[in-house]
Image 1 (tube, rainbow over the protein chains, first blue to last red):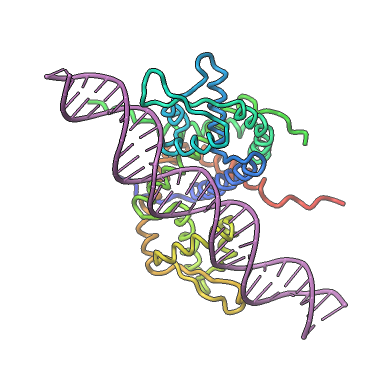
Image 2: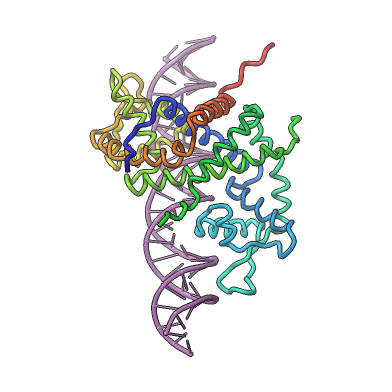
Length: 161
Length: 161
DNA sequence: CCGTACTTGTTGAGCACTCAAGCACTCGAC
DNA sequence: GTCGAGTGCTTGAGTGCTCAACAAGTACGG
C-alpha cells in the first residue's frame, strides 16, 4: 500500500471535529432515549425498521438475517438485542414457515406504543443536537459526504480481467 | 418546546446516511485497532493525548480530570480505561504533589512504542474509510459542519437579566 | 479552627457489544 | 438418497461503557 501519508492540517482538523461530534451526538441521543424511553439508541433503530415492515403489505415481519443486513448489525448483536427486546415485550419471534432455520421478528402492540412514545423526544434531541446547528446547505452537504463514505464500504467492483 | 416538527425529506436522508456512516466508520476503526494493536479506538485517543502531553515542556503528565475533560470522557470511563491500560503497561499513575485527591497519568515507553506501532495502520484505515472518499472541498465542509454541531454542545450563553 | 459544600477519583453492578464456537437446517452435486 | 458446503441463528465468555454511590481531600465562610 502506497499509503504512508499522514493527515494534513485540514484533514486533521476535520477528523478531530468529526470524532468529537460523533461522540457527543451519540452520547446525547443514547442518554435521552435511555432516560425517557428506557432503550438504547440501537433498539430504537430496530423498532423503526420493524414498524416500517409492519406498515408494508404482507406479513409485517422480517427475518433476523434481513433485519441484521438492513441495519448492518452482526447476527449476534441482533440476536442479543431481540432477546432483550422480547423481554421488554416490544417484539416477538415467530418460526418461519418456509425455512426452519429462520426466525421472523415482528413488533408488538407494546412495541408500537413504546416507539410512538419515544419518537417525539428523540426527534427533538436529533434536531437540537444536529439540524438546529446547520444551514439547509450544510444538511445537503452532510448527506452527500456521508453517502460518499458509505459507498466506500460497499463491496468493491469486481476487478476487470 | 415548539419543536413538534418531524424531519423533512432532506433531513431524513442526511440523518440516515449519517447514522450509517458513523456506525460503519466506528466499527471499521475499532476492528482494525483491536486486530492490529489490541486496543479499542478510545484507548488510542487517550494514548495520543498523553503522547502530546509528553512532548510538551513540563511534567509530561496530565491530571485524570483534565484528560477526561479534554476527551469529553466521564471520570468513570477514564478511570476504567486507565486501569486497564496500566495493566497493559502503556500508562502509569502518579500521585499529584500539590493536590492529594488528584492523580497524574503519564504514557510509558511501552505506551509510546504501542502508539508508534498502531499509528500507521490506523491512519491508513481512517484514510481509506473517510478521506479517500471525499474531495478537498468536502473535507472542509465536514470540518465546518462538525464544528457547528460541537458548538451546539458548548455551555449555553448566560441568559440576560 | 470547624463544618459544610465542592472537587477528585474509584468502585461495582448492569448492560450492550464482539468474537469464536457450535447446532440445526437447506442446498446441490453426484 | 446422501454427503459436504453453505446458511441462519444462538450461546457464552470477555470487555468497555454507564450510572449511582461512595471515599477522601480541599476551599471557604462563620
